[in-house]
Every structure is written in C-alpha cells, then in structure tokens.
Length: 314
Image (cartoon, rainbow, N blue to C red; front, side):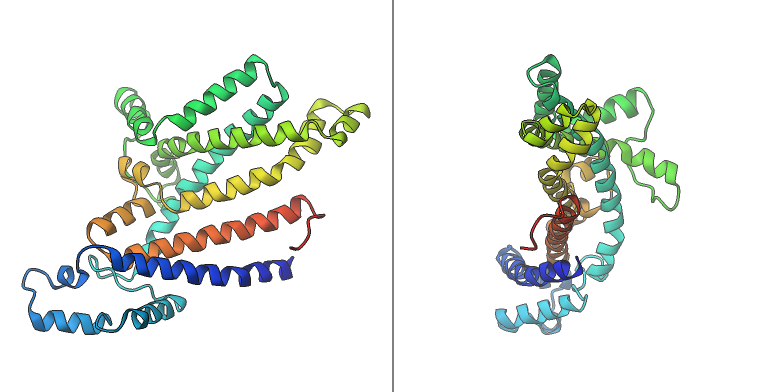
C-alpha cells in the first residue's frame, strides 16, 4: 500500500505543476493593477516603483512564475494585499471552518443518499422507487441559495430554533457551533444526497443482477445480509469516487451558502479576495483547492484497494 501511495503522489506532481501554470497565467489576465491597490490614494511614483521591485513585478513573466512557484513549494504563498497577512495564515484560519462544514454536509448526504439509493434499487418500479427519484430530482433542482433563505425564514425567523447566521468555532462552544452549522450543512448535504442517491441506485441495480447475489440468495442468506454484505460492498467503488469528488468540491468552498449564512470559510474568503483584487489570496486558494482534489483522488484509489484487494496496482 505504501508503494502504491508513493507512486500516486509522484504521478500527481506534474499535474500540480500544470495547475500552477494555469493559476498563475489566469491571474495575469485579471483586470486591474494590484500595485495601485496597495499604494493607496497617493500613488506616489517612487512608492509604485518600490512595490513593483519588492514583488518582482518588473521581472519577465516566466521569472515571476518561477519565483512564485518556488516560494509556494516552501509554503510561502505570498502576502494578502488587503490584510497584509500571509496567505498561508489566512488559509489556515479559514480551512478548519470549511472542513467542518464539508464534513457535516457529507455526513448528512451519506446518511440520506446511500440508504435511499439502496432502497430505491431494491424496490425498483414501486412507489418507493418513484418517490425516491422524485425527491432526488427535487434535491438536484432546488437552488442552494433559495433553500437557505427559506430555512432561515422558517427555522430561524418563524420558529426561532436556530441562529440565522454567524459562526462559532467548534473548540469554543461545540453545541453552539453545531447549531450555527446545521442549516448550511443541510443545504449543501441535501443536494449531495440527491447525487449520491442516483449513483448508489445505478450501482446497486447493476450489482443486484450479478451471479454472486443470486448465489447468496440461493444459499438462504437473509435479504439484509445480501444487500449490505454482498451487493452494497461491491457497489461502493463508484460511490467512493463520487463521494471523494464531492468532498473535494466542498473543500473548494460553498460560495453562495457561506455568503447567505455569513460563514467565514473558503467561499467567503475567495469572494472577498476577487472583489478586492487580492490576487495572492486567489492564487493560494485555487492552488490549495486543486491539491485537495488530487489528494482526495489518491485517497479514493487507496479506498478501492481496501474495498477490493483484487484490483491491480495500475
């Protein structure tokens, strides 16, 4: 397993380098001059020249890229133009918030999506299957911002059960933290649950037709054992793929949801950075998100080998 993970990490290095080229190149295409934003209202020519020299903006673009990627490799993602804080420090402050939201949303999606998908496949063609598909279609169709606003109106304004917005760190007050995060997690998790339900249903329909499932039933095993131990375990490979990709997407930041519920995570950070032309922050977030996606794919490959040891090392 260790050798397998090492090979996957080595293969990921060229991908990360290619992503860094796109991240740096797209930043150069954005309108506006970051030096003008840093210099303030005075914009003294000497100050502008000093800032350009300090941040290597007078160097050729390839030299700027090599400088940036070299610093990024050592953990230096630059300085925020707006807050003057290191980008890595900003990411370190926001990442736990987004991870908490992503984990809660994924947990909600898993406990809803997978059982519903299994039940829908097992009861194919019945009213249970029809209701599950209608519910999944609704979950995919309802916009997150609309669902979030409706939950705030009903749960917070009308019933007063949960706070409408804000964030409390898990370490400061676990109960208050869960109360502030449960609604945004449900908003995100409901859409993910619909996606997981559809993939689980499709995977289970294929597995339930397999010979080993019919053999297990012929041996007299109970339906629960057949569904969970034989069918679901073999259907988990595509489900694991979808789950890891969805989790990587959540780590990228749920922009609208975090804005609606005023959650200081990745989504809000990147929106503020774009509006303030804080290019170093945008670059750092995009690069970290891409690395997160690659890491989740490597973990998915490792999970395949655990679920099915017969899979090759390729």
